Length: 447
Ligand SMILES: C[S@@+](CC[C@H](N)C(=O)[O-])C[C@H]1O[C@@H](n2cnc3c(N)ncnc32)[C@H](O)[C@@H]1O
Image (cartoon, rainbow, N blue to C red; front, side):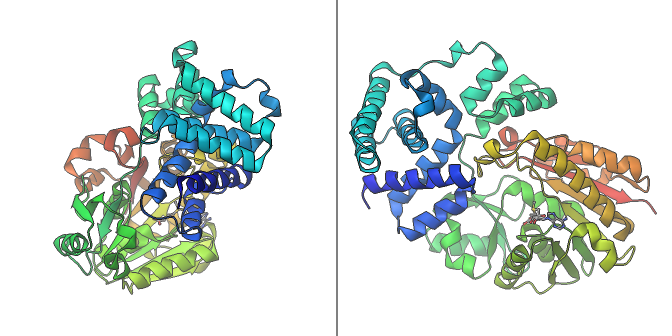
């Protein structure tokens, strides 16, 4: 595969993301398979696609002084310029002249002479003159927004919730590459067994930062291994691994996972139950419930029952007080996982946050009666927005006085995170723990 093709494929992927607002990781994986992009080329393609999305607004800021008629610029030309400038500024392994040459060739093929000479002119000017500084932006919020390529409304919102300094750190952290961590299937294997098997397959791993069953991948991709096929582990961020521990399950218990697909947490709960008891795994989408069943089969866990159901109607299918533990790993804005899904920041709106917080509260209220007294209800999201996190929990507790914050939650949190637990809740931020941003609240139903 030549470099020319890699950039051409990158352009097609980026255009398709712009047009359909499809998630970048899915589209990228499909293209890698379709074009059989391998080795270093796959790495370069991934870097160009993710980087160009992640830095979109910064790249436009850099390009703006060099483009005479921005309104007339066709979207494919803008995307081609973005991905070329991304490489010139952020990747040092390809010389600028090669990047410019390839951009001009693509422009010739896709457009006409006028366009290719404009692309050539813009990129050569940037090569010669460099790009402008962020110091030109007076407003500090706007500067963070442009410098880290986040929408201004989101930067403003986080500045109100977390303060200016923390917001900048969060936004910067969202530009870094996420780690790959795996969760050992402790129902069937030990951490050492999995480590040894992966090492045999050329995948270097180290102990995770805080979850006992976590291994951090240092080299290689654990997804394409025999160990994965054999069900020795699940690929999961470490912050997500805290959720099943928060439930504090004991063998033979019955657990409701009310928003379960694709099954990352259901399978963890099933593993902690050591194959005993039962996990009823609900999801509203039929095609997603199939994914839970697939994972349970791969991991050889027989104590999971994947079920298609809107959990807001769970009361029609299950009796009051029928579960020992309930998890609501709610649909959310995903603002904690922007490193993995950088397109989210341009797609989600303030209205989405508001609507999601209503659904989250509805789900909590619907499943609450199904919990036995003294049982634990865990609410979690992969977002860092307070309206979807502590505000939802606060609203729920106000209306449901049978529930209280579970102060024993702190005992089930790893040592280095204990200080982050407040009132039975923890908010992990991407700049602090180097994991995904994640929120967990642990509530107990009073006897
Ligand atoms: C954050 S994801 C869950 C991730 C999952 N717990 C895991 O660890 O793999 C939220 C899920 O909730 C599902 N969902 C959204 N609304 C729902 C509802 N009303 N009832 C049940 N599931 C719902 C979505 O389809 C999505 O799969």
